[in-house]
Image (cartoon, rainbow, N blue to C red):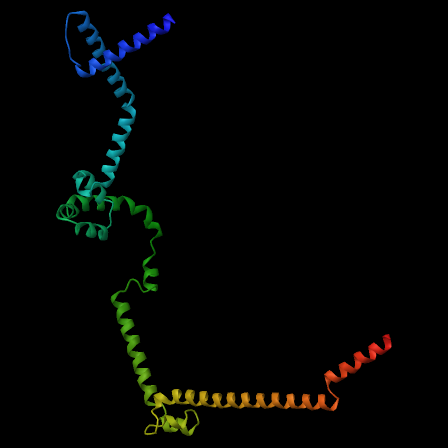
Length: 260
């Protein structure tokens, strides 16, 4: 019991000292009470330092994350010019054009001679290993990619010969009347007819659909007549005692008589 009472008194003294240190953290004195208050202040400051030291890694991680987020959301203009010039050296001409249309600063950097010097230097280093896969001049001329003056003249001459040949064949082409006489073209294709030659195919398609509709109506009527006649024959056979139902009835009656 005595130990418990001493522990309670010590706890009360420590709580009172903590309250005094919170109310007056910077008290300097020479007496016993002043010494107690100074000791309480030192204990409070030590606890605060320990709390800051314990929260140090979490705070550093939060600051690092916020810095990374700020760097990710930072615009391109905030980067140093040296870094931007190095990045622009890897871009194509079309990408540089799109970048230059963003703002004046990026336009000034994308038009800098240093960027194009870097691009040309990098191209000189990257092209020699690829020269062996380049097609020859004969292949380019065969694919009509590389056109010389002789090739252009030969193309023009070939087109002229084709046009002359076609004009001669067109002059020797028979007239529409001759084609109608030979039964190659229908009579409607003659000029001056009731139907324009361009509408002959449409007219024939319409006539064909009209014939199809007539045949469809005829077949539908004929099918209805056949159905009516078959129904009439069935009713007549049932009334006369001849028919499929009557024969089945007689068969089962005979089977029943045999079983009895």
